Image (cartoon, rainbow, N blue to C red):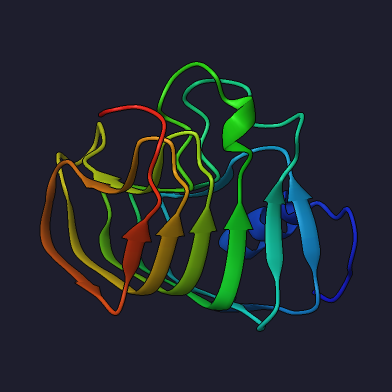
Length: 178
């Protein structure tokens, strides 16, 4: 993928997740995202972002209190290599609720997130929990994550086994208590 401007990453991500391709490389893009980027019920996928990419929450998007930017649910063996990827939401627009997380991992196994910069969610930078299919997530690796300016928390671990967080910073949380 190599297009700058207002692009729609959702159909590309959906096509990738429904294909036999195991790795998607995303290069030279700045995207305004209006809806949740969902990775659900899939296995063995790798997303690699080139350095310098920004994913920005559209000011008209994420209006429901339960919206999240990136949702990983009931998956296994998923890796996101950000190479400094910046994901930014609009915390100041989310006056109600505390659930507009940047990354939500629910009921998933063997999930790795590396080199991501997460800013200004209406909830948590990273949220890890169970789902209706599996009561916990497990074998989660967060490496070189910057989670800053979130409304509720930089990270919330609700229900998980074997979570490794390394070389990461969670800071400047302000807005509401969990």
